[in-house]
Image (cartoon, rainbow, N blue to C red; front, side):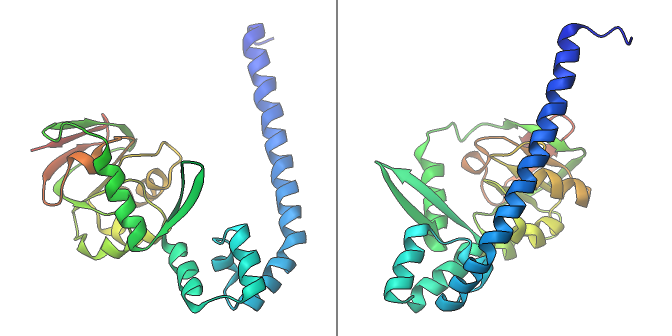
Length: 224
């Protein structure tokens, strides 16, 4: 009736089916959590940690802590993981980085790929429109938020909830990673500040104190 092609109709029905499947998955996931949550709460109680802290523990860590008793240092580690942590698979082995280890790992990875640090212009995806000019502040994790002053350009690998206080002061946000639905994109739109994500090498090329102009309308970050 609308003069749609068979391909268009197929895509519409496909999108409808995917939406229904997604809703069903959410229902099953919520039901599963409701069934397992009492067990997780009991484990958290025995290990003397919060439910949120337990969520950042690996399965084998939980088993070991239940068998041997949790060390105070491990409780502190779980608290740190709420702020930030990474799971890294190298040579078939998984390692966990948090706190200073997390920051050092990010810096090491940032330096590992050789890039032309003299690049004057970075390109990414503008996800919150606008323009801003200011000094760069590289933020590797929440411990570095205090160096961000009002109007600074916050540059990070990516952002997450713990960084929101710094994001609220920033004149613009630039990240290596992310897309339209990334944390940086959503929060910057809520704050009404320019944001460019997906630059890939923002933290590798820019450094603290650089004067840059962010044009999120075009997805361009230019050193001045």
